[in-house]
Length: 570
Image 1 (cartoon, rainbow, N blue to C red):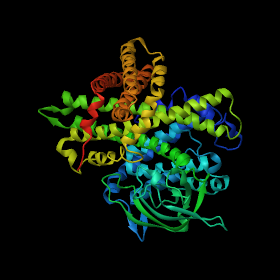
Image 2 (cartoon, helix red, strand yellow):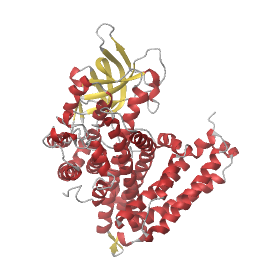
Image 3 (cartoon, rainbow, N blue to C red):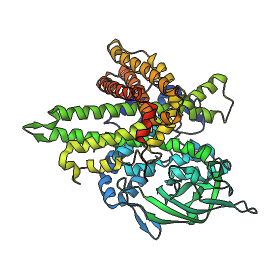
Image 4 (cartoon, rainbow, N blue to C red):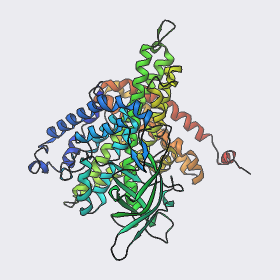
């Protein structure tokens, strides 16, 4: 099969973004490791070449191993034997192949066996793996837990556990409970500490835990017995070697069937405290969730890419009324919109990853030295932008993923509903993306802050200042008009100071912001590479139509109209 990295020029385009020079310099701390490690890069060109070579290996493994295994993994899935998870043979082969290639713990520093990669190539790898098999991407992608351990655990824990990832250790984040799904403040799993030994023990039940039988798990638990909210929760590390957690069952899911989703019973499970007490949800899990949402963004783009390619291939091959169906406007319009949406969300994905890269690099630099005032301001800006773009990315990428998978199945017609084509699996796999790691509705709750405090508008105005080629000025003028109208309609909603009304319109406002921002990003992409011109024009015209419809709805809506939507069940 094809190399999934080499057959997608868009990935190399984003990997070669101009900002990568700054990101690599910060991540490599001005290439300080070149004297310590034989394979550490000596300069920017050396680092970027390493990124390309490793991603070619990932692309080859995805094309030759993971993708061919996907159908059988989906059919057979994991099994529960004596309360332990046994991966499907294809899943085990996938993980072993990536482990042997040294691709677990990619972003970890070299001292822990990692590659010290920045987030951009790591996210590209996540997109590649997701295109090959979205279910397996969950298992591979949970190496995000290693980053959380690296960022917040003490040195003793880091030295003991982080090197295990490069040797193939699997990970899980044990957050959800039967009565604590989206509302993690309701977590009740108990953490108690022995006053004499200092040993923590965990007791309770976790549910819907991806890869629940992992080697290393991060567990959110209530450490303060009198507490009832998030301030009483701490984060713990559980090592499966202790065999104190029972897998009660594996859930039978609609999609991503290769990824075991488990119900876990903790019974006096020994655990290690990560960081400080009471900061589990407030600080550590929020950081972990942001990484996971970036991962779901990559997963969504990967699934969408796979679905689009399946639809494009079928549309060329399938003939009706004497010609291939791709020649019919109804079909080529669908495919063109699919392509434009993928290009738009991919641009948002890697823009977000670059913001994350810069702020994370600064956070590690300040462990060694105090940041200069200019660096601190840069750190704060990139951290703030990463925070507001992450929910926007998760919202749009997952919603578009579902739309694209649905349209891909539609293009297949009745054949797409059968097991004969991969598109039905992709359709099922896509459905979870706008549910887990925070539903689309919760992403709107997080993103509306960027509307209310003007952060999105400031970003739009900054993007508006970027130069574009003369032939793209007409597209820029559309975006400038949309930005002006967005600013006006936000002002109209906010001036009423009615929180319920703001909540009611929040999705419309957030989607308007996302359309404009992605439009500008595609325009920038077109400026660097004219291959994106068609997607930019299609997307910006679509965004203009959608935003004007949302604006009209908001302007014609009165506060009293809320009553029509308050349905009572007596």
